[in-house]
Length: 499
Image 1 (cartoon, helix red, strand yellow):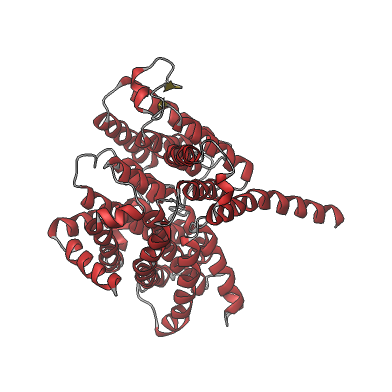
Image 2 (image 1 turned 30 degrees about the vertical axis):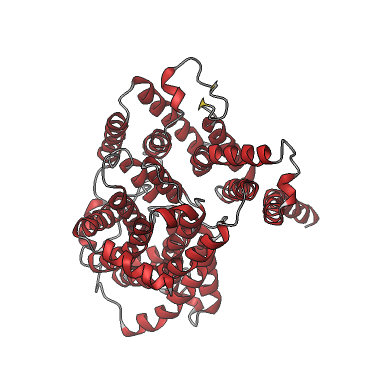
């Protein structure tokens, strides 16, 4: 019952004219940028972090959430029309959506994607509103050793689930953890890894790292592959609306996709890629029209798109309740919270309830805005795809540089942006996931502080990490999550040798 009253209060906050404007700007920017090939919501939030530095915290975070939802919507447009997902969670949509577009049914594919996203987003946001407070009640009982163990779970699961190789994921994580050590040690006051550079005493700025890895790295990567991959835009032919048969075939996949997306998105090892492919596989097995799969089945668009948007609300559960990002965009939003001196977790619900519940309520509004705007503006989004890539990425580089200078005018900061940009390019080139670097930089110092606090309480006895049942269980989960990918890979090799 308390959640109902808190949500009602959040609605009054979200309906304030300035917050409505922030939500509208967020969904428009998110959709517009999500439509552009290779630019997902994480990159958009990263680019906007420096610019929103002096804005109202509540409004900025509402805008970031709008960008997150909008980016999820926009990614499906490129997946359907040019077979190039705007972000990784739209890969499953591209399998059937592009085939539908080639068969002259791009309109119904875009429509089932938009409506499915709205249905899933609404149901999942309700789940967020009622599940997050329960998690907060549990998290209040956590001691420092439990929080450290929780961070270990986050480190291992994020590293193992991003990218194809757990080793590469862990390598990326250790790069982030090493960067998190730069600056003044809060316990001893000693400078660490600053190499005599005064600007590094405050540590590495999350915004500089994020913009460098995501924006500059992506621009360099796309420039390097420009003549390798040619994109062909599929025009939207026929009606934009769904037939009665399309509705009949779509509503069950929407609900099933939501059931896949929200719980998996809310897990520490969640994200949107896993539930979208699970949803696609389930629809392929359950369909009455198996012959259409691979040729443009509407269920193959409806289910994954619902799972995609439900997982977006799911990832906000651990972010708001525990302060754990489970996706690249959630890591960017965590950086957004931290630039205003806010730390998501149990204390945020107690200290700033109007901000948290205003954010949750704004997700309903953003979802409705997206449905109203998305279908009529399909023509506009398609025109955005015609922007020449050299113009687009040159603009992103200028925007990234200007934003970094505005947030922290320093030659050192600009040099770091360039270094991180080259690092982001090399990581993409050699298939190393980028999100674990950002997660390591954000959560590393927090994990270190909690570990030191636990050891101070126990007078240096490391067994305190195993004495708490919660801590012992979480560390056990972390060990299993670390070993399991290697065991599965070894088992697959063994089976292949037997065959």
